Length: 173
Image 1: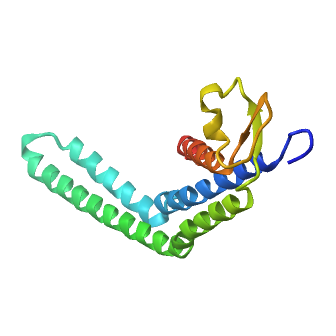
Image 2: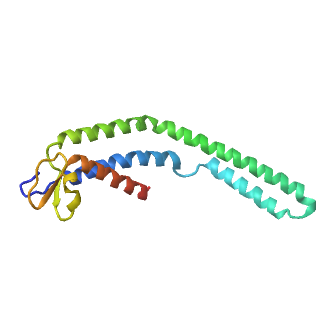
Image 3: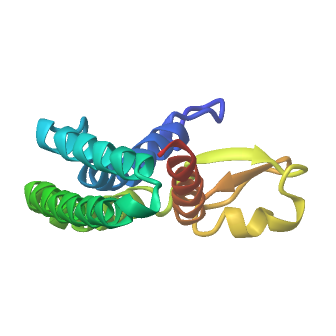
């Protein structure tokens, strides 16, 4: 912390925690979305659409059997498409699994290292008037403060940063 009370520790910790929250969400998003549809998927969708269109044009009682057959064929194609999409998700999941298994240990290790590094030192300070009833809770284990400032400890700051960054990730993704 600098002599004038300003510090880059709080925003740096926030950015680090936000990145640790964003990376697993990004990987999960990549597994689920998978990018642009492939030619096979486009072809299946076009076939299904065409079959349903043909079935809807056959509305006469004499063509009911033919329309029902087209609808059944379209339903079978939809099942085939769903099975193909599930296989694609499994393939993408196996691609990202090696990275996903390291996310939680890296996050825990980072929180532990930040906690050890800033245990006795405040990460920032804020006016007492802004946090009147919660001032002591925010300065938990961070040393003393001045009369008009509350020093923010690492544990409350990590909790606050992780909650806010989770909320931001939910809104963004």
